Length: 190
Image 1 (cartoon, rainbow, N blue to C red):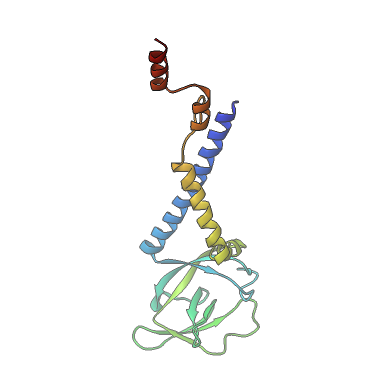
Image 2 (tube, one colour):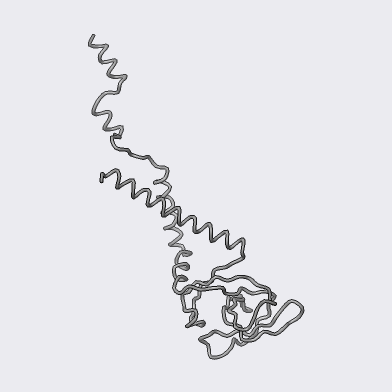
């Protein structure tokens, strides 16, 4: 296998990996907008062992009337902190709101105050440890490195392509004169 073939194969592999990563990002963004799904990263062990620390969960926003005991939901507390725990009690609170009593699976007692909501994000599924990756990918370091990677892929995609037999301008000028120069040199000799 020639050096050119190996180089071309590596270039195509890098571009294909970049294209697949980009497609995955687009699919996730479109699914999020169309279906209202949200990613949730579990930063504590309050839902262990069912959902361990570092898990990535996918949640769907549902109206209060669809929330049942046993659902894992994510709501904001009075301080604006996101709490994701299991529903242990649901009580009607007005026409379109409910009062939820939540408890983390690993906690001994239910949360101290109920949450009154008109809707909540209900966990559909979770994947252990993927949340660590998602959290790192949203860090400033990962965004910076992603920018460098995107720039490198753009250079690969739109940079000059060297083919077998191509020579650089420096090599061309030192080896032989261009066709126009050769004609002038022959005319001078005659």
